[in-house]
Length: 321
Image 1 (cartoon, rainbow, N blue to C red):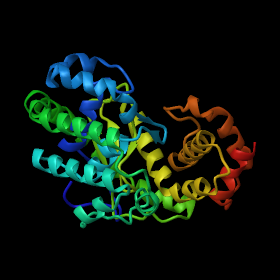
Image 2 (spheres, helix red, strand yellow; image 1 turned 180 degrees about the vertical axis):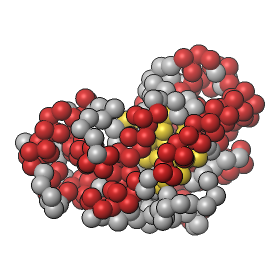
Image 3 (tube, helix red, strand yellow; image 1 turned 90 degrees about the horizontal axis):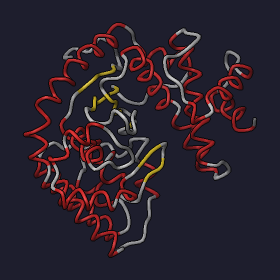
């Protein structure tokens, strides 16, 4: 896509950096197992795989929670659009500086052109504090960083060419779908909340078939497994637009400290699911969220919903039920 049809377009892309980051997770079986791990196991040295596997608790993430180093090795470098080996090396140098200092200010200084007002990062940047100079954690981060740098060339040689071709085909199909309707405008109209970015970029991922999916890359981005059923993918992409429009409500409730994280996260995701049915004009969706009690929450939202109710009031209905 060159000329966007809508004021705030949804754009489906294929990027090397995020795909490489998720490739390492998949091959090392961090959080999940897959055929992909068997197919591409030789792209990471055996000793490096052992190191990754022994530190998987630091790198795992799911449902809004993660290990101590997971953000440094997934969402943040993906959001920064790192693409080359030298960029990754520079980035991991900054990771060590941040760990030594005990806050995220080194990233703001090193990547001054990034939009640190992004809703997904601004509060973390202002508030994130962690024990500085944790020797063991810094040493582990340094070893892991070197593995990521050393394994990049093998990924580019062995995987990326085939991956890029497969991703490009699906990206073209999805871009065609999202050029036909202005999904962001539909969500804005329903919620009365403006989408606070110029576009929504979805990076297609080749490696995460059986792992964490629909991973937010900042407010204006996401990462999706590329080869799920087409209709389901389109519907869940719409769902993710909704979660980003509703994120301030979620963060406000998190800040109160009154709610169990898992219950709050489930109420937030299923509220987006409820609204998504209205946006799409369907009675049933092609996806479900059973681990988040979607059936119960959707019933609560359906009974409590009336035109004009504030989403912030609606989510409380689920939290109080």
